[in-house]
Length: 90
Image 1 (spheres, one colour):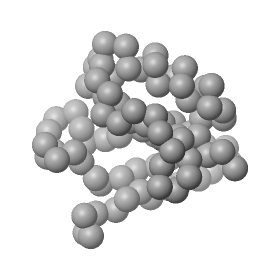
Image 2: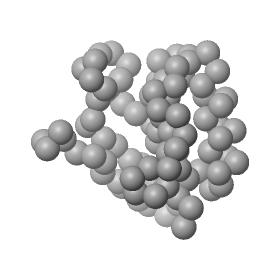
Image 3: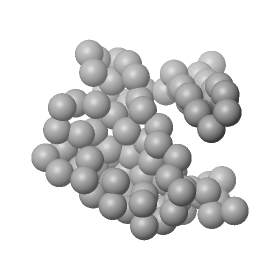
Image 4: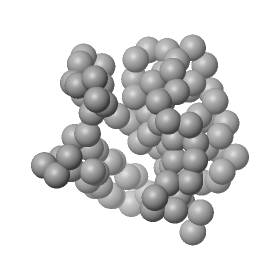
C-alpha cells in the first residue's frame, strides 16, 4: 500500500471530485477501476443514501467511525459501481 494513493481531491466551488488508486484484495477487475465518493451533509443523509445504494448490492464496509474521525462506509451497488460515503462531523 505504500505505493498507492489513499486519495486525491480536486475542488472547484462546492464541487469536490475525489479519486483513489486503492482496489480490494481481489485485485483490479472491470467495474472496480473507479469508486464514487459522496460527502454527505448529515448522518441521516449518509445512512439513507447508503441504505438506498445497498439495495440489491453488497456491503463492503458498514458505516462506522473511521480512523480520521468521520462516519464512513463503502458498498457496491446492484450495477457493480463502488461507492464511498462519508460524513465529517466537524
